[in-house]
Every structure is written in structure tokens, then in C-alpha cells.
Image (cartoon, rainbow, N blue to C red; front, side):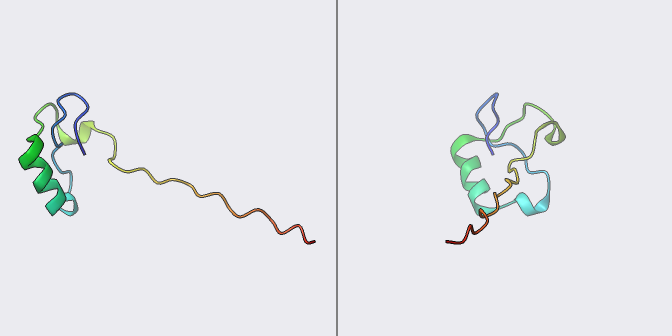
Length: 58
């Protein structure tokens, strides 16, 4: 959520990103004005979860 350049909160890219946590972070860190919102990578990444190993019987 913080800009890697200025360490302030990046602007939200969608209405869903306007949260209480974001508002509180803006009051503490300030709002980033370094670049346009489309220039940043997503704030979260989907992580693949490995499947359980097969049952070997026993």
C-alpha cells in the first residue's frame, strides 16, 4: 500500500480500495503524489497453494 519511492500511501485504483485502514494510513503517512495509479503493480498477489501429497498407503 505504501509507495516505494516516498513511503506514502498510494492512491486507490478502484472504489473497493477505499477502506478505513487506507484512510488511517493516509493520516499517518500522507498520500503519495509520485505517479499515476496505473503505474504501480497490484498491491496483492495470488499465491498458488501446493496440493497435498498423494496417500502412499501403508
